[in-house]
Image (cartoon, helix red, strand yellow):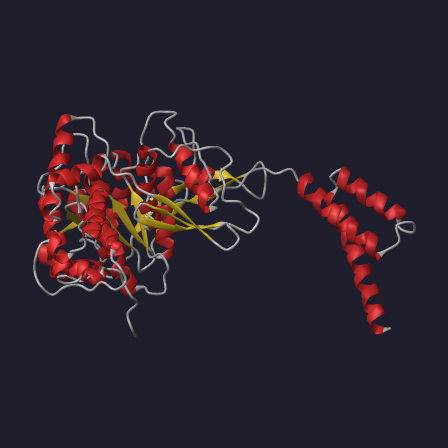
Length: 492
């Protein structure tokens, strides 16, 4: 049987860790994966699950224990109001019990940041999977007032923690896990990963990009900034790859970025992409600003952009905004700086804004950076004081591209149902009224209103008074008569 494709690029370190994880899964021992941030722990587990359970769409279920809203009820379950029988409560299983019954893998992310309450709930389950179990036994957990729940034979528990150094785990129940340390990928491994994920950058470009990323990462984080990890490397390689022209081929000679990418405008765009990925966030501390300036200098030196050119790109350069129009004069695409975004305008929608928007340099700069992230489907966080135009800017670009903008005002009272939906009480008279209106229209075109006046009065009264059984009976009678009439006409 052919193995399904996986996004993981197998390196020497990941291969060794994969063998250890597979051995522990074969024994169904609870396993703790420890590594530096962004070292591929979840990717490794997803890869193993995909190979062992290719028919299961989502074999792994991740639970983020750093979330303070996670409690015993969300793991085990609770009684909730019945959706079918008002006034009654029914038991709804939590994510942990559901995964146990279905044989999925539970991944406890950031277990070292979990609360003692949650760890206390998980501890009996971990005990049932420990080294003292007999061969063939299945994991189980005792749920108060619900009895003992046994897990499916393929059920497994994994936990992860991200630490800068391999310090001993001290959370409650840590000694009951079999710990596997996942080594961080070496520079050679990273170059191989870039080669596999971005074929246009394979060879010397991948080596130089990884080397430059390592020199930036070695500076370390400053106050008010986040550390630079593998996600930033992946994001920058993705952006650089998208900048390359269609006819570009990777050179076979070694050199710096300026020698590999000779075109000046391409190197300027690469510098701007590095700004967005590595040092483009606003800073409020002197140490953070000094760190960003040092990163800008390192990238500019690698691209052989002089200090004046780099300063011009950061402080003076104004991105261009051009609209590509079709034969009907409608906006077909927007080119904002180095990015082109296609529009989705129906024939009846005009590309003009309903309100004016000032295209000054700060607005164009932010628009260009947002457009670059949108083109690569990257999430964007806009930070600023109230009334500085964050929503207006997004609304402007959405209107120009013919995209629907949905604004959600989140607060401490926001719930998951506000985002993904949920059940809510509905007055039956509302859908019944729509159904009665459609029924009346069809009935009038099929039967005589004068001869069926009493029937219509009885049906309207049943709908008006909420006698739904009576209304449904009358609807069914009318449908049966209509079918008989149609059958008679077909026979004639």
